[in-house]
Image 1 (cartoon, rainbow, N blue to C red):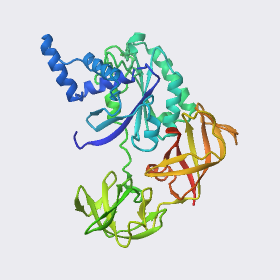
Image 2: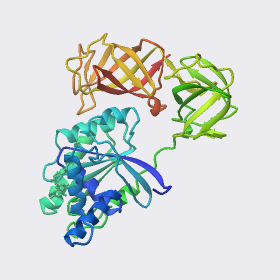
Image 3: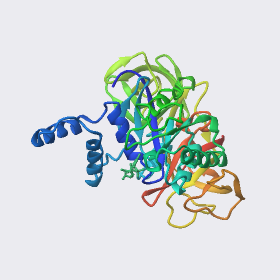
Image 4: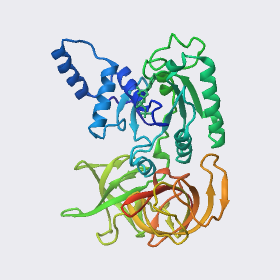
Length: 420
Ligand code: GDP
């Protein structure tokens, strides 16, 4: 990969509308098909005496790997355009999509919504658009796919565009942040080259639109937030907390504070890959040493930040959650484990404040008695032990969580406000 800017891209849309095919097409057109696929093709082609590398082969291979249960699906494929290195993050349908997306393991910056021209907006189209809005996706490129199946008709295209625009309005997604493109992932129309079949369309083709996505916000403007993964004792150095810098910069000489343990001191050394460095940036995994802070003073789940702008510790917090797989209903008093950054803390749902209609984003019910699968709601939560967490509008990286119970992720959400 080059040192171009990075984009995490989600591909969303109803089942069978062509998400995998579109990813296969993007990999093919940008010359990013995984090396092992090309190697295998060469071998097979030699055996059969055929030449050339075809799109159909990419698709066969993706399908085959999927059948074998290899996790390839389309998640975590990479391709590069003139402007960006793209990573396709988990897609809805993939088991842990929502959990990964929400806990930041695969936070998507922008998304491509695939809608089949011959099928229009379907339930999962609706669900994914709602989720994308809830999780704060920046821009949406709407690929109206399978145009070949409707004879590249302008009126069929326009009808789907209207349906999608209605949906965006319903969930209050700013349509100004959406672009519409008629494509055929299968035939390759308007993906890397302008299609001969859509003379009535003079907008951007897909790769152009991808190139023009806004660059992800550099997270360095936010104050330092470094969730602690582990705390080691290393002879000759002393106590070494380790973790990944989520936002801000960690410099030697900084005065830092660990919350909720509530201890502070001056950073003496910062190490990355076994080498001492003067500072660490977002994405860097570091070990560091802080004057006067011993092994028993801090623990996994603490967040390190500037002493004069420390991570907040929530007495209670209000959050928006989406319930995905709970066997029955969630009522007040429910106390599952919340997973936020490196912390795992039992938290009680103190009140269910509002139920939200997933298709409209409107308040559907004030103070409902319960919520269940498919519901979105605003809840007030009380951690049973001190928990450092931040409003997602201020520090997205520290403002989302997954709720787990009975060995599975049952809901996910983001923090709206914190009451310290
Ligand atoms: P996904 O479930 O959204 O990932 O959909 P797939 O990519 O697996 O596609 C579902 C079916 O639609 C497959 O049989 C594809 O070959 C077909 N398909 C996908 N894109 C197109 C297209 O642009 N034109 C046509 N005719 N078929 C397509």
